[in-house]
Amino acid sequence: MIEITPVAQAHFAKLLEPQKEGTNIRVFVINPGTPKAECGVSYCPPEAVESSDTRLSFESFDALIDEVSLPFLDDAFVDLVEEDTGTQLTLKAPNAKMRKVKSDAPLLERVEYVIQIQINPQLASHGGFIKLIEITEDNVAVIEFGGGCNGCSQVDLTLKEGIEKELLEEFSGELNAVRDVTEHAQGDHSFYK
Image (cartoon, rainbow, N blue to C red; front, top):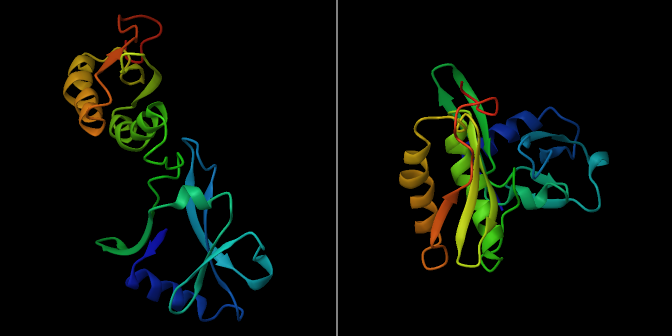
């Protein structure tokens, strides 16, 4: 479920020492399952524990997770990183923006998951994203580009050498192609003009 490195555990134990007895930590997701999802960690005094919370026990403390955040924290990782600017607590939750899908889920759900978790974060560095429109009867993923990808001169390369290659590899034997239905001609709809 959530991995907290020994260094991060020692950090939490030290932070919890001066707190009220019985205080633990709470790991949570604000706006889970949305593009605006954000993860956080806070103190959790005994009176803030809910009966529906999941409790993960570590050596010096427990981590509590509310039932809404729980499925979005699958595979989460908490670490304490030493950088030139100082020590920083990092929480990585790859499923915070979209609930992890099961391996036997319909192809549409699994492709959507890979797009949201693997592909869109890469495109976001250029201000872009893709949206899955449908999977056709002949197993072609129909996508539409948005943001910085709409009107970009490199969109064909991004589609063929990036997105299609990654999706066909991920869904070998299930997905046959990826087709773009975006109107890329320059115009009012274009991100870059």
